[in-house]
Amino acid sequence: MPLTRLIYVSTITDKFEASSLEDILRIGRKNNSKNGITGMLCFQRKYFIQCLEGSRKAINETYNKIINDERHTDIMILEYNPIHVREFNDWCMGYIPTSQFTDPLILKFSTSVDFNPYDMSSTSVDMLMLEFKKTHLSF
Ligand code: FAD
Image 1 (spheres, helix red, strand yellow):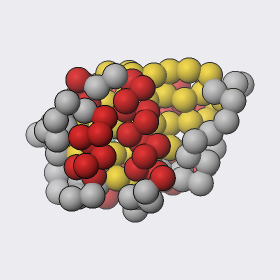
Image 2 (image 1 turned 120 degrees about the vertical axis):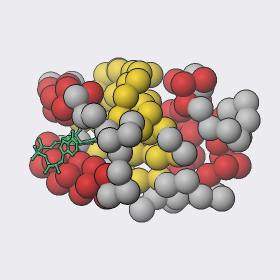
Image 3 (image 1 turned 90 degrees about the vertical axis):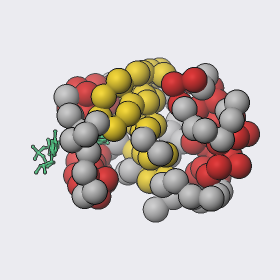
């Protein structure tokens, strides 16, 4: 099974509660580590960006669960490609929350600090996540 990277964006729904993020990270980290999936989840304002890397089978199975999750909607795939090497090999699910440190990086790859990943190119989203990783803005 070739190594594959998937990046999507989505928007929270009214089913997303105060405890949801913690639940998603807990279950996601447990499942991803079991399934050989690495990646990063960014939550900025009302939007998610997630990058998932792993075998094509594991990525497809996980994505099929994620798209049926009512805590988010308007899920749009930005990238689905075979890759030769993982970018997030150390993280089963790195997490980037909103902070004053993320705004300058968001501006670097967007038209404004009013973050809207649907308006960004897939390359910009990819580069933004790599920049978050480089600056160790993860939890
Ligand atoms: P279960 O054992 O059926 O569920 C585990 C727990 O998750 C349940 O006890 C319940 O508390 C909670 N849960 C499951 N589905 C829902 C739901 N629809 N609404 C509220 N609570 C629910 N999962 C991953 O495995 N890897 C990921 O990288 C990942 N990323 C995610 C990113 C986002 C933005 C979102 C919204 C969800 C993500 N999930 C991820 C969660 C995924 O959608 C499924 O909920 C999860 O994979 C179910 O795990 P399980 O099969 O072990 O299910």
